Each structure stands twice: as C-alpha cells, then as structure tokens.
Length: 458
Ligand code: PLP
Image (cartoon, rainbow, N blue to C red):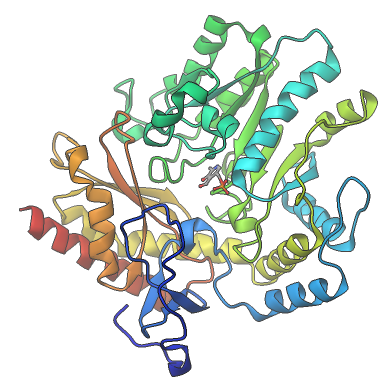
C-alpha cells in the first residue's frame, strides 16, 4: 500500500463500483487493476503484498503469462462443451495431472467450479456409493467437526461447524453430527501433544456408536483447518487413527483440501504428511490458483468401480463442471506448479516465514502462531497466561488485519473458533512463489501491524 505501482498507466483507470453488492456493504473496497507475483496494485497507485493469496487461492502468484496464454488459446478453440456429451483435451490433461500427484488410488476426478460444489459432490457421492452397494442402505449422515469450514451452500454448510456462518441459516440445515477438531492450543480434553493419545480422534468412534454406523456414510475433515480456526495442525496420530475408525465402521473418509491442497502445506496434499489415503479429496482454490473458478472431487478408484458396476451413473452435476476453459487454466497452473517445484519451495519458505514471525512471541495480544508450509495462523488473545480470548464484540481479527493492511500487507481474518462466538485469528498464506525478501517484508508487516494493535489495546 505504501509504495507506488511501477506502472503509472494503471492509475485512475476505474471508478468505485457503486452497483456491486459486496459481502460487507459498508466497506469501501480498493479497486485492484493489476497483479504481479505476490503483489497487487490498485487504481490509486498503491501496492499490496498479498499475504493471503486472496483466500489462499492465488498459489502461483498474479499475472503468470503462460497461464494467461493457455486461457486465450483455449477460448479461441472452444470455450464450452457440456460434460454429459463431450470430453475435451484440457479436461483429460488436467485429470491426468491430478491423478499423478494424488495419493495412490485416487485417480478419478469429478470436476466442479468451486469448493462448496466439491464438498456437496462428496456428500452426495458418499450417499449414492452406499446405495450402489445396497439399495436399502440407510447410510446418509456425514459426521464433521466444529470450527471447520466446508462451504456456504446448504449441504456444505450443514457439514460446516463454523458457528457464525451457520447461525442465521440453521432452520435450513441438515442435522449432521459434529465432533471436536484437534485444537491443541485449546484441547477440549485438557491434554498436551505429543503424548495426548488423540482423544479428539476417538470422538469419531463415540459418535458413530451413538448415532449408529448404519446411518453414517462419511466423515469429512480438513486435514489442516483453514479459515475457520487459523491453521490447526493435528497431532501425528490423528488422521491415521481416523482412517482406521472409518475402515472399522465402513464409512468414507473425505479430506477437504479445498484450502490446504495443491502444495499449500509443503506437500501436494496435506494428507501426504501423515501417509493417509482418504476415499475422496475435495479440492478447489489452489487448483486453478484463481485463474478460473474450478474445483474437484478426487475419488478413489474403488468407489468409481462400484458406480461402474452398479447403476453406471452418478446422479449429480453442474453446468460448468469440467468446462474446457477452466480446465485449460487448471492444467496450465498445475504444469507451472510442477515445473517450478513449488511444493519444495513452499516447504523451505514456510520454515523461513515461521522463523521470521518469532518476534510475535513477545507481543501480548498473540496467543499462538501455528501452521504448516505456507499456511500459518495467528490466534489473538486478551491474556496470554490464561489464553482468554478477546471480547467477541470488539471484532479484533478484522481490526488486526486493518493495522496490518496499513503496513501494505493483506492477511485473512476469521473469528468464533473458541466457543462459536469468541475467538479471533487470521491466516497468512502468500502465493507459493514468494521469495526470501518478500517473506521478510511480509513478516515485518505482520509484526509492525500487531505491535500497533498491542499499543492501541494497552
Ligand atoms: N472447504 C474449505 C476447506 C474451504 O476453505 C472453503 C472456502 O474457503 C470451501 C470448502 C468452500 O469453497 P468455495 O468458497 O469455493 O465454495
């Protein structure tokens, strides 16, 4: 925000868009007219370091020429065909690339246009999968977790455990059971990793016994929790234990990697950190890195085989699922990501970013800094010793991000993860192409912004 854009011609090219219905109807939004690497430029000549890739989306950075070219070339050939009639070269290419980097067996890709469509797909897929196996199956419930996010459409929101997003719409929601997430900073079982023996994972087994496994089709979890709780990383035994429980009770394991997938945590998929193979991975965001609306349910071969040998048809689909233009963007993004080995780069720069943020341990409003790769969360507190959250009414996550924005750095706020009401955190998740100097600039912006916040609150 502080340094002027190098390109003066960008200045003043657009007016404020007064007819747009923004989520936050009172807020004035800067008009972004360009982007390059980790930076965004507005029409007033201000430069922003995009410290959260929008919403952990722009993984390969802004303004990548080969991706723009691939989109242009595909649009000239054919922009749209419907998946019920035709395949296309971009969709074949993208599915092949995704199968190459996915855990073993996950090699059937069902394309959609975003994260909520991906998790809705997984929800319906798990129901139909059990019906394909047994037409009288009663399995339909999806167990999920509090303080986790799976999307804003009604099926996805029913699985979502982020209370502020659910509250107004509760009358519309399906009654899906919820367990606690692995929130080690505030362990609901009062334990401390690494010797905690993951009672949070065994909550799944307890819930299955309570509701009856014959009614449960799947368990959905973000392997690293993103926007809803600020980069919660589970203890090492958590996901392997969950996998065993799912197998024991014959339910599908859906890993929601809409945010943490495609290299964000320093592996292609976050489940790879623990060698866990889910039945379905839901993906979006980093998959096309913002160059097109794109998502997918990446499905295990054995599930696809049940459909093939059963009715032969998945009774679901969206008009834009698998459209050639979005898939051409996705394939070009994935080729760029592999060519530049952004997974290893993310691992290295993630460690540097965490180290650079170390001074936050002296800031009285910072309770916890956590995460994996370039997916970090900062939890704010009123009292570090007691871990008391800030009063919810003060909306301090948003205030903190405004202080950080004054330093020219954009981060992504969230709230409500302590008890559904209180709890302030923000995510740091820059494009994976960030370099060392930019990491230092990002960390300094966060530290300076939070220093100012602490002075204000003192
Ligand atoms: N799942 C997770 C883990 C997410 O983080 C999100 C979005 O933030 C979604 C699902 C929903 O994705 P979308 O906003 O593309 O519908």
